[in-house]
Length: 396
Image (cartoon, rainbow, N blue to C red; front, side, top):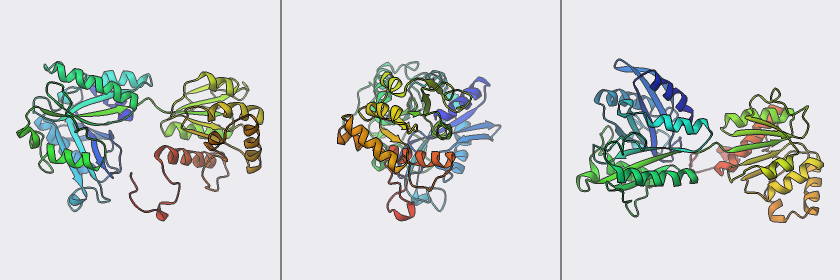
């Protein structure tokens, strides 16, 4: 969704009609919660498509539904699964629920979200995806309060702010008076997809408004699409390896900082893909900057006078990943120096050194791929093993 915002805002400014499709529940599907696809319409058919909700499995069906949604002016919740594979569905397994909404319901909320994203701040797109027809498709920013649902608007605003801090997208249910429904916090997994399908649509191609609304007319299901601030990738050492890693880090969605004490090396011209290039002693910069569990720190200097002081701070920080480059001899010497400096064994155990996965990398670009692969594995809790040697779900 974050990547689509510039396009959506441009379409909005030009007065284009479009349809937005968002993954609101997934169990073993190929895309994460909040993955989105937008279809710009011309006449009765699609003119341009951006984004993806399944990596190709159900996009054609979503585009077909988009034309119907725009023609009717009513949003729709579609659920796809393996059982639908012969017609249209997830041939690789899993279940996916996609909310499809026309721009004619209002897009002012995208401006507020776009402003936050432009500042690299967290934001939430909050959408009612099931409930009474008069609330389905309304948003936190330009719908609920304007249509008289002040209590519900207040409730989802409070939860949205909390979920932005947590960085977690998901479904929640409320009554129209804003009271949350106890025990019905629908999470991202199989149960959420199944319950959402059972409660909100009676089958594929159905509109919204059946299910529990027949017996619980005030029950509302809200999807919180959390657009977290980008995670940080801090690279120490302004080398050719750092330039390649900065490029792939930016591609993976990190906010990339390159830091080196040597001004002749740490220049914006050498690192065009870095968001910022800092001239400072690494340990001083790291001690003064903000870190969290999503931060990745890569020390590429392989020089003790830089490595040891910055790693002492990094290994005692909240950063989720800390890696350091060097030969096995260099890495062993570095560990000994860190141990002598008083770094405890549990802290040393956090260090990925030598950095990266064993891909046989030689060039800076190949080395950057090796490091990036380890970053992804650490972030997504992957094994790093070839998929042909593993069993179970590929998309977790």
